[in-house]
Amino acid sequence: MDTTKIVTPYKNSNKGKKKQVAEMFDNIAHKYDFLNHFLSMNIDKIWRRKSIKFLEKSQPKIILDVATGTGDFAIEIFKRLKPEKIIGSDISTGMLEVGKKKINKKGLASIIKFQEGDAENLLFYDNYFDAITVAFGVRNFENLQKGINEMYRVLKPNGELVVLEFSRPEKFPIKQLYNFYFKRILPFIGRMFSKDISAYTYLPASVDAFPYGKKFIKKMEDAGFKNTQEKKLTFGISSVYYGKK
Image: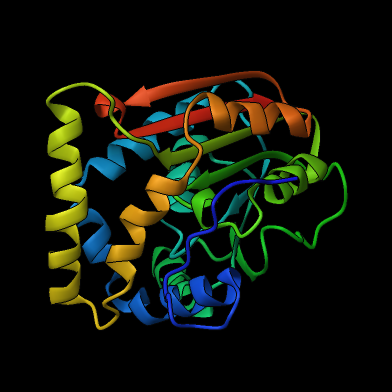
């Protein structure tokens, strides 16, 4: 049983987490890329590139990018690995619409395909993908263990999972600076640019609730992943998790 604390964007809503997350991302889709890069000072781009390095040796040909959002990670994966096909799956129609415009503009529509879908109920055959990636998406799963189990199911034997997600710095003074920025500055800036006030208070709350580090590795291993490892990035602000089926 997944005992991960469930944090939702809208405290007064009767909808489940999945529907709330989809609604939230639909609301902020038009500003998401700008705020994502601005609030992280573009460090998120460096984190994505470091995550992709885990797949350079195997050079996977068919890749699933779960919680693809507007497709930034999928585009970067194509640039660096040149796979035959990338499928970007996301629960938010609004985010995918923004992503499709970017893909069409870059002439990548024949390689990168988007599909609306639930990460906990992936609409793919068993043993289909060479690799699966997720950037800043697993903490939004309603049932984290179920989502990890599903990714394991659709990976081929020896297929690889790479997850990039926020974690929490534990050393002074980075921990204190991080908490101040994440809980005070980031929500304030988010409210200035986004019509959805809850989105940027949900972000730090969802990070606080996320079982990062060894706890997340344990969930991967419970799903069946082997050769698991974690690589901390930028003083532990985020981490890359790797596992093999």
